[in-house]
Length: 207
Image 1 (cartoon, rainbow, N blue to C red):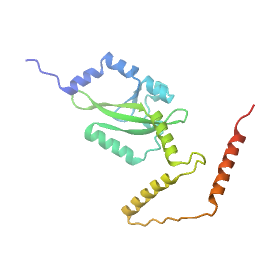
Image 2: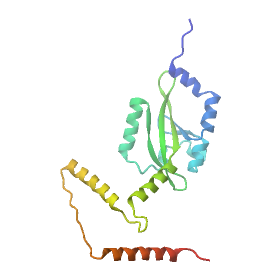
Image 3: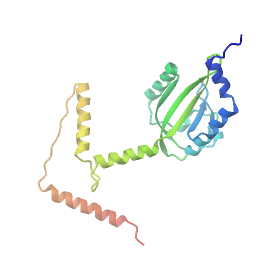
Image 4: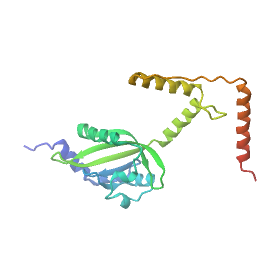
């Protein structure tokens, strides 16, 4: 009787088919194939277009070449633990492109095993979420800063105050708030707005 192939074996054979190769090279999301030792084996076209690197520049290097300095040791320890436990990790990652630009991406790392259950490689899939992050920063700017002066508003003050109070409760500390009342501040504020508007007008390029 013909024995049914195990799931790892099916996956292993599928990974070597020409169709799988075309999916990797033609995918819209950036992809890296990384060896169990953490060495980049291949980078697809979408990844190279997004970062400015040539595929030959990525082969043989480690993901550290992306200068992931925005993430501390705890971040990578959690990533490795998740891969060992469940074989997959997902989360946001800030990577540095070849020209030095910082880009936020949503990264999915999956473990690929061969037919005997050993780790063959890791597949890293990068989804560009920078436009979403830019919109989020814009909304936060509108919500927490005065549109005329660019100064933090009352909503941002209350948000930071709640964070400080929560941190103080966790660590058994106290929070002090200093309130300063200035007579005639409206006139000062109005003058400041006029000064900022004048400064912007002076900086505006004129023919």
